[in-house]
Length: 249
Ligand code: 1GP
Image 1 (cartoon, rainbow, N blue to C red):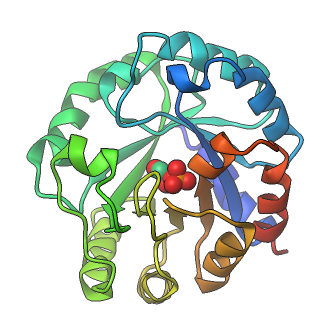
Image 2 (cartoon, rainbow, N blue to C red):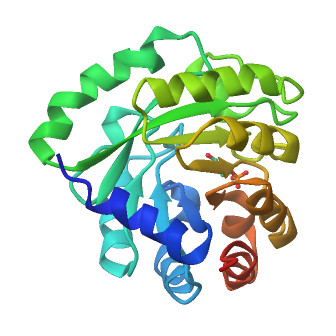
């Protein structure tokens, strides 16, 4: 099994304290400035680009991923909304299961459909337990996956699922408030999970400012993800401010 990108991620934590991921939804809404966007990420010490989304609104996904790959200096990690988004341009993929939910299709169904294609492509897989938390709004992932998010004020439930992810052999846990969440994952939740598990913790959804990011790193996040704020910002170099706030070593 390939583990190059996984070890690169561990190295980022070791050297920088925490890492910064920028999410690109390779959808029509990002079509016009995708090269400029990737260029700005190159100049901003972004550690990896996560590419994917719960819903694609046109058929241009694969061409855009190819374009991202041609321009990016950092690894491109597939963050799957579904098997149809899979292609050979990625450096690795999060082989993820929505463990917070009770929808068998997103616990194991989609993964079984994907597995033979993953093997054929030969892409590195990073097993990830994905926990959706309630960020104060119905997110696309909640709707599309037909799963119920964990209430944000129930760190006990989140801990139980994060521990289960670790014991199932997942290499990383994603605490997700959902893209465009009103409220990002709380500091208390991050601290509680960090105290209980040994594997790295990714935190994303609703992070709007470098200060939000910095507080979450201090609480124990190993990686911070921004999507909406970097996608919508007039000034793409806002990524530099996030990088500075996240890379604390
Ligand atoms: C979504 O966590 C990511 O999967 C990013 O969320 O778009 O709210 O930054 P935002």
